[in-house]
Length: 241
Ligand code: ZN
Ligand code: FE
Image (cartoon, rainbow, N blue to C red; front, side, top):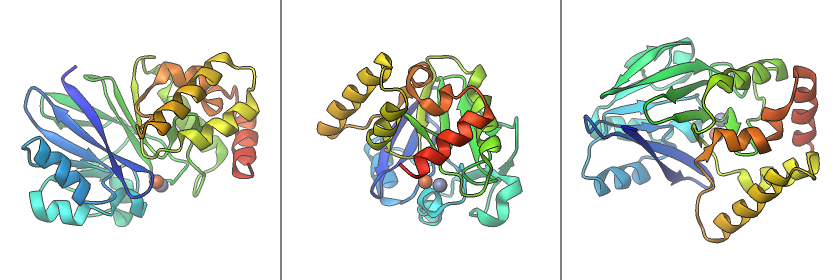
């Protein structure tokens, strides 16, 4: 695995992800809500920033971009179709784009639902999925712009990724998501075990991410919904939970 991903906590419950390609030494940050924690993480590694990868336009995912651009002049990557709502892009991408990142490639997956221009990134060489606010551990993003059908189909696009893929999501929502998930599937033993693990991690002040996609497939009700209709019901129930 040449690419690694490290969670950088930002704001109250956001994670930006610091990507490092061990072959070229190139660095990237995904969804920097703030600049200072990103700068600190880069300086701890003695590195500058080569790329910023954006999943969607919300402030808690782009707030640190201007300052990081001023400091490092990285290449800013985002969805060309949503460019008017994003910081100035150097590399505009769309479904299936392969973005060069040192010795590796990031594959772009269009995942509308949370916002219509939301995209995810997958790095085969590292087994890393960056779903932004589309998929969380034990949950999924709120539908601010898209329909339940769009979100169901967006999440279904992760279906061909391996079970050992590391899910590097945009928020630490796992503990509260666990409560809802347990209300949906109280008898799911894998979910009960995950909920206990999450509680222990949070009590120790540790992130619950990344989590393996295979584990989410066994525990996340939104990944387990069999069709659009049950997905829509689940999303509505979570909104009112
Ligand atoms: Zn968002
Ligand atoms: Fe967010």
